[in-house]
Length: 423
Image (cartoon, rainbow, N blue to C red):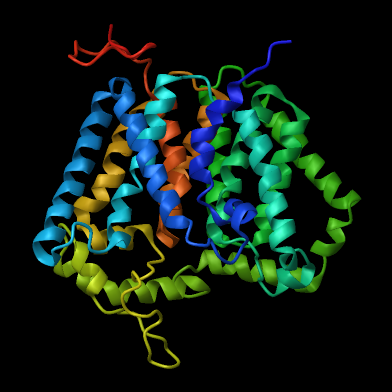
């Protein structure tokens, strides 16, 4: 019997996913990383840089320009830090907002060098039990009706959001192959997302599901009878809810009231729930953003006192010199790097993804799921900064959407093996 080693192609992506607290809790517990976080981040950056250097010929020209721009900005930041503070990297918190892009390039280069090798079913088979196990082992207090009613979620929003790409992958497989195992896993992921009560994740998952259904019907040739399969899945969900007693729980007036309140918070994001908190934070920081709209505050932003104060005590919500803790990807990038910094992250992916989104070329079910997940990130960014693993998935998505590698121009460097060698 020949042993398949395809699971090894999962390791780079899993290394990036391990930055999430739900997964690294297996090694370090849920409270303290024991000083491991920074060395691990440095190791990821080093590995990503090595992957980009080794597989550089596999990068599309647009991605090369994007990478070169990011590296140039990082170099300018280093020089600015040394000129003003006599330190090459005065505030690592600020610099990390640039280095977080390097794993994206590393995964893009790796998966463009080895196309069609990522075993997505093994990815779901590893991650879904790992996330459920983390919830059971490290956050058991969240697994009760009382916790649900008291909004004791257990998982952070970034950990709950990690369920979304898994749900979309299972849904894509179900719609294209009709396999009930994939359909049941999708229903399980969806139920868990609802139970964890992160409203932003609810919205992003609903958007991802709608995009997945539309893209599968439009761009996946092997999709058959999408409507009847969705109806059958809805019927199974109803039967499971009735047969397992979940319908009794959902009939509980307290549960109905809780769900209704959460839905009302989504419908009124500026006046209810944590949306009010975010609007107040926007109002507090927008004057500073307007003061430096082009390139932001950069290193000096870390020294700016906290601008957001508690309504009760009048004290800053967070201590000074801790990074401002923005609850928005957009506000975070605009404050630290201005409009140019925001474009540094968003412009290249948009230029790479949108033409392929609106083309008529067929898409694999896995690519559809990743594309739908990637399109939810701008919505997620309204409420939270992007999690580190989002850049990893984005790198894999760009590699999936890219055209087959073409021969590179002649180079003085020794040839690399494989389709990107340029030989």
